[in-house]
Length: 173
Length: 181
Image (cartoon, rainbow over all chains, first blue to last red):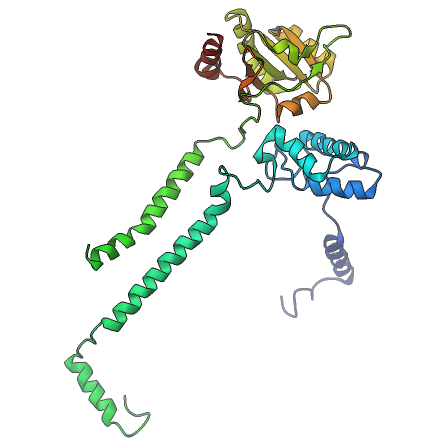
């Protein structure tokens, strides 16, 4: 299409398209938290949301309970709010759920002997790779330093002489 | 060891790393990530008291769980895999004489009764967990789940998902026999 991608488009179509783009840009993602679950106190509700984002939905496994529409996620969201209303701190609520579902329920599992490989693994690999690279570089530098320059072949020797004797720049080859 | 041999060995390092990682990944492939470890293993069952399916009917509480080795099965009439494992529970109760208690998870009592009328009732007692809170205390994250409880009322094993004949023969029954000694 000549004259740009929108040239063939009517004004009305362009308008619709602009509206669609605007709507897509400014709309918020659908929320799993239902209005009837929410706490009246906005501070308390904000804490509940914060905690919910730390807890993994055990049914879908890759969403937090704050994002998930699963039944159990809803039950846990309600439970989190109940514990908050009962006066628990954020840490106490997380501990309450952790006691029942284990490390897996926490989207940021604690560093323990069991999860050491999970947290430390990438750094260990990085260290290993860095060490390997350093070793390789050092070896290579040493090889280059100590390597005797190879003798030139007769052909190379002839070309070198020609280049050295050439006093007309640009015509040498 | 000469410098050259050492250099050669160093070249094998990536291969070694690959083999180690590959080994772990291969092991990971044989595991089902949807099966989570229970936090209750070797710990006493949570304190709970659930009403029965009907008004006035005996329910289930943690006080019922001591004295002998028994199973707790978490089920619901709306759960399809529960139907799959149910005949196996019937056989465990009737042929092996295993005591099986039930936690009826987020179910309508009438629907649960109809389910048992149709499929048979292998349960010694049933607790109706309408809001699923006791199940959360057990760390239940899907139905069905089955727990092996020892004589002291401690949880010794959890099975996630429907029981298959293999699970019963290889794990549940040997475990019950071992714990009953």
